[in-house]
Length: 332
Image 1 (cartoon, rainbow, N blue to C red):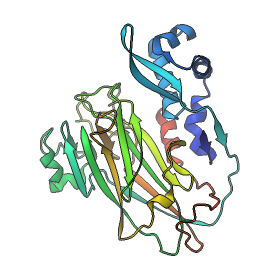
Image 2: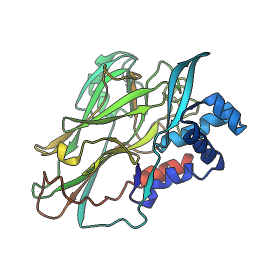
Image 3: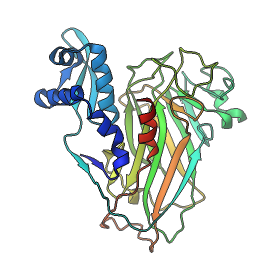
Image 4: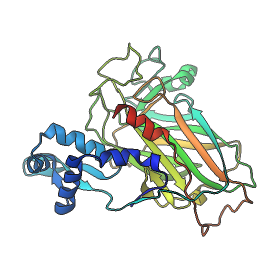
């Protein structure tokens, strides 16, 4: 079930459903269970290219999933409906909460493990040379605005400003992400995993390493055959579980991440060797990709006495980051 707790956070989904063609596409998939792209195009009477664009819109909001599988005529891409229920709260309940937000530059990782193809760049130049992991230790890495790797991880620190007498309600992370293919490949799935405070919270399968259009923020010198843009993904962990863009990806709750000790909370992005799709990872900063932003983190906590492990508490939805809807709306 997709649970929308604040109207603006649902704009990508509402926009996806605002097309008669996409609604008809969903009806087809609900009726037949799974169809390949050629079958969808034939039944809807549109081109394969148009199907690809419509499916991408439905993928971005979590309604549809695509996968490549063997068929009689070779490999084909199949689609099926991922979520069959949508819950929208027009007037979500609120309560007293505090929040702090931080922007983390993509080059401000504190540890890494990287395999080529890989690299990093500032807004002015490539750091070192392509496909040499040693340059991830170059002190200039703190100025990087884009990083990419085939497998491994990058770990960041979220500053811990949480008072010990406050119950943490939710952590939100928003970042522009994509796969990493040699040159680029829009159809190149990769499982990008997330962990907070040492706990794996789930993963998102990036559809590809996108290069069919130039990233709106990319500097003029950035070559057209390299990674151009990604998808803006909102990861939320609260009392109900872990969600990406409103779709539940795991049962890990905010209680599972606590207690938060020390001066920082580790945040890790990774493509592990055991992943089903090891297709790399690209993280875009504000000077690359489609979005003028770095990695954004929001920590929401209550004003009452701490109840760290009270998993039976009634959870009240926190306000979403409206930027994800506004940013998508500017270029979709």
